[in-house]
Image (cartoon, rainbow over all chains, first blue to last red; front, side, top):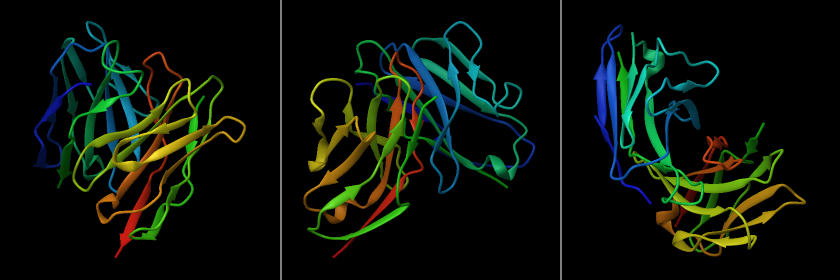
Amino acid sequence: SAVISQKPSRDICQRGTSLTIQCQVDSQVTMMFWYRQQPGQSLTLIATANQGSEATYESGFVIDKFPISRPNLTFSTLTVSNMSPEDSSIYLCSVTGWGIGDNEQFFGPGTRLTVL
Amino acid sequence: AQSVTQLGSHVSVSEGALVLLRCNYSSSVPPYLFWYVQYPNQGLQLLLKYTTGATLVKGINGFEAEFKKSETSFHLTKPSAHMSDAAEYFCAVTPGGFQKLVFGTGTRLLVSP
């Protein structure tokens, strides 16, 4: 398994600003993902964070809105840019890879974002 | 492409009753299947998984699920519900190879005394 922490745990932000969310893992992992969970909804994958290269975005998500960094095998950031109330969601990072399970993903506790 | 369908956005049971949460999947390759639970204001916790081998898998907190290829199902059961089981449950599928998870829409389990 893996122990994952996220910062901040929650935030209230103003429209038009940006927020960077951090995801830290206690061991090196192959894959890191970022999901969004809108209020009362299921999880939707935003992107796969690739170490040393640009993230791979899912349909409907773009780099300008959700820039992602992954400088090493234990850390990633997701920025929510130029926020609007529609960005109010829980943002979760997850990890998987060799040595930490059989294709299951382990999730961080999430960042609860409210945009006013 | 893969997809997951969870029948019933809400399931209500009495404490001590059988819990049955339904999950059907679509996959062009042998799937890896998972059930996750989300308690209020918390992240996702893995309940159980099916990868290969035995089709009846047991998880934490007394839950189990059976992979039925012919029915493309992976229903979650627990013989006797407890108040602490009240939560949101998500079924998810992946083709393996550490690829992304595709989630169902979730089922909220309500347990009454």
